Amino acid sequence: MTRRSVRELAVVVAGFVVLTAIVLRPLAWNLSTLVYNAENGDGQFSVWNVAWVARALWTDPLHVLDANIFYPHRWTLTYSELNLFAGAIGSPAYWLTRNPYAAANFALISSFVLSGTGMYYLCREVSGDRRAATVGAIAFAYCPYVFAHLPHIQLLMTAGLPISLFAFHRLADRPTAGRGAVLGLAMAFQAYACAYYSLFVLLLIGFAVLAMAWTRRYWTRTDYWRSVAVGAVTACVLTGPLFVTTLFLQQTGFTRTLAASRQYAADWRAYLASSAWLHAWMLSLLGSWKEVLFPGFTASVLGVCVVLAWSRSGVRQRESILLYSSLTLAAAWASFGPDAGLYTLLYRAVPTFSLLRAPSRFGLVVVFGLAVLTSLTVAWLLERTRRQAVLTGLLVSAAIAEAQVPVKFDPPLSPHPAYHLLATLPYGPVLELPVYSRLLAFRRSRYMLDSTWHWKPLVDAYSDYIPPDLIQRAPALAGFPSFESLAGMQRDQVRYAVIHLEPYEPKMRLDLEHRLTEFAPYLRQLHRDETLLMFEVVRYPAPGGSQDAPAHSPRPVATPPAAAPR
Image 1 (cartoon, rainbow, N blue to C red):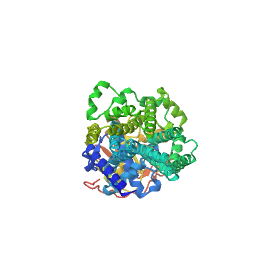
Image 2 (cartoon, rainbow, N blue to C red; image 1 turned 90 degrees about the vertical axis):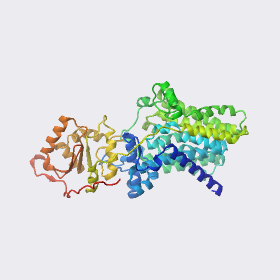
Image 3 (cartoon, helix red, strand yellow; image 1 turned 180 degrees about the vertical axis):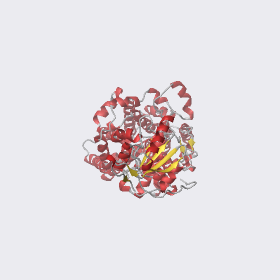
Image 4 (spheres, rainbow, N blue to C red; image 1 turned 60 degrees about the horizontal axis):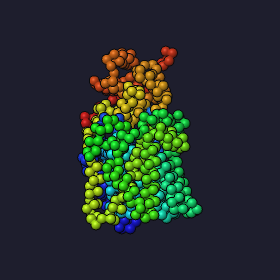
């Protein structure tokens, strides 16, 4: 890189850091003490996920997939989005603070900066104008869709889309093996950041490869196809571990049906829904909506107006208009789900589509395409006006104004004091009660969030995929303490039981106390208050009246610190 390009990169990154800090104020300077929607189950899951990866990458990277959930299963991180890239971004913040919220918030903020930077370079490559690229980048990086998914860290990792297309355009302009490898690296980056978007990138690049071969008559250019092949091989090699985990999930029976995806399909209302200040007036006109997909007025108007530039554009500009218009229309078609047709075709043609369930997320590609087309329109307008600085200022200001969303941040949830004690005790798996049920699924994400204090393995947890054997064992485990539950705990060497009393109705609470009295010889009480009980299993009842089996040598209970910092 030349000194000028390094300086430009520094300015772009710094600009998006400042803009992100303004848009997400005051989160940027309160990484450890604020969180978006603290009670949201998906958000709690994301905090745990990022913190687990951030910690494991430093302490035991070879077992990063063996997350501390669904003990004694292995590869449990693969039961939902891996978020390996988000965890890697958050790892410096985690190890500086030992705070899971700091890690997750740092990854969240970084996602906006990376997305804006990647989109800037794509739009600059396509439009040839830095000012136009700035408008397009802001329109994409801060679109209403991403603010609607702040609790879902993986859905914020949108940078791989523009970075991959930027790498492809560079390859198409000068096909080399090196540029093919860069394209494969960019696609692999998106795969490790978000599985949904990795499929989007695969489809976008596949379409772009064929479209470029058609528009530039590259069908017989061996260097072009050789570079594309290098990119494909590089992406496949780098994402091989992810492919293995995908096969693992599919072999266990984890799939999403077309019928199930219908409830997550977009409708026309979704493309007018937004929570931004400037768009709030539209919500009362919609009544209800399934997803937030409004691209913003700047991207919508300027993206559509690109047709005005067609007749006076050069060959390369027409090529880009055709490519991104086609991608935008195809993505909008797919977002309407199985009933619209295209999503059904993709579901049957692309094997990994069976792991997806939300066609509406194709709406992000619609915003992406319109943002690129916006940069082309802005570049065309700037060429035809004498007051370029004024026009640029107005358009950038309009894009920033639409990025203002009323985001409310809360203080983070503090762990129960019993977890401070659990952190000081010897290693052992933990059974949290009440156990998993479909009705109380998100309560389990709180178990996972609290486990960031002690990091002991959890028997019960929440994820996209729930092991069938846990569902089968749930009734027995729910009866803890009982002969059946203790037998299962003995088999898996589960050492601790934490009982959250709030969900228990009075009769259930009374039955629980009776069982605790009956099985007192097998348990050692570690903590008791009005909200939580914690026990260590010290021995197991033997079948047939034989002598009971000791569980382990108990250690004296330590006194929890009065105020252990996170």
